Image 1 (cartoon, rainbow, N blue to C red):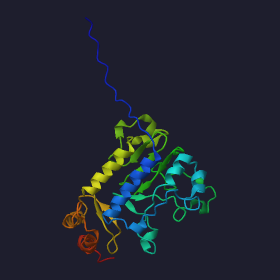
Image 2 (cartoon, rainbow, N blue to C red; image 1 turned 180 degrees about the vertical axis):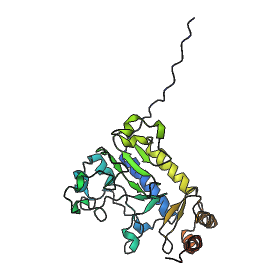
Image 3 (cartoon, rainbow, N blue to C red; image 1 turned 45 degrees about the horizontal axis):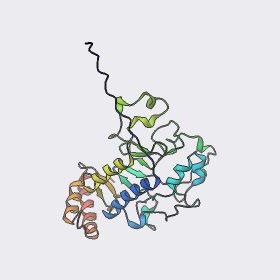
Image 4 (cartoon, one colour; image 1 turned 45 degrees about the vertical axis):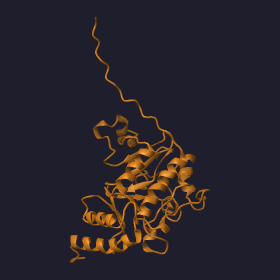
Length: 276
């Protein structure tokens, strides 16, 4: 009897699918969680009606100049674009933080008008220079970022409408030495593993709703943020969430009345403002 060497088992490629309504529903659920927790003001959500954003509201012209596909534009037409504060406030012009060190990327004309740049060739710049991707290589027409990261520690939500998955550009998802060779050449998004939309958004929902990551409301000079466990105010914010009934009997207004001054006190104590 001849003994044959076993062939190493290969991972079965994961099969994904794209459903616009399902993705929109997951995005909306995520933002609604942040509203429910007092992180986002309800009037700051900027959500479209059932028909979606019009061409006058969504900057479709710029998206087409940048070569985005009809499927990408259709997705962007149906998702909300939350701001850091409601209309009439200074924060209304600021991008909302929607995950740890991660801010929403708005494609609405009231925020994004790259065509008004003095350089007529603005659209020839790498997407990284336009703030639309975390890498310099060209981004395929069927892909789009929904967020950008702060100080390279957040997560860019890079959507692939063709394969039907997300390539989250962030430490928890990078493949590092296991990344395919194409990631170093012309497909840099492959430096991160492909994840289903449901898996990705479920993970974020669990982290935030369980207070592993803690939403902290705007307070004084400090904008609303989603904090990690080791951040200065996290322990205090987490305690206040529990004291005010999160998650089953949450009193949001009472929480905010307590959390705003508490966050100011913690951060004022943490940082020395004497030279400010």
